[in-house]
Amino acid sequence: MSHDAASGEPATRSEHDASWSANLEGPEHAMDRDLIVEQSKDAVAETVAGYHVNLVTHGEHGHPETYLWDELEAAFDGIRLEYVDRCGCGGHVTRVHVGEE
Image (tube, rainbow, N blue to C red; front, side, top):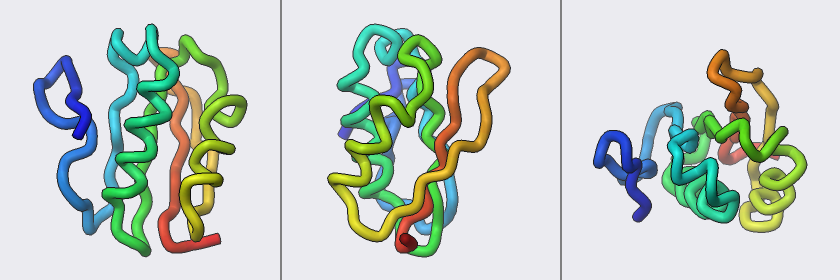
């Protein structure tokens, strides 16, 4: 399980049976796009069907549709991706609905 360096907590704790957000905006994420992809997959895997996870990705890598969405769609059946907005800090929010297509 990956850890959020800023808080010392896992970026993707155990299974989530409610909608939640994964913070993928740390300095380690700015330097490593593959880390964002890996932790995003972890977050989706830990989200129970019928809920969503907001993936808050570092702005350094641009719009997540260009590097993350295809990876998630290839890894999971039954998800729906939705771009929510750009954060004030420059990051991007992708909402992944689990258990939908």
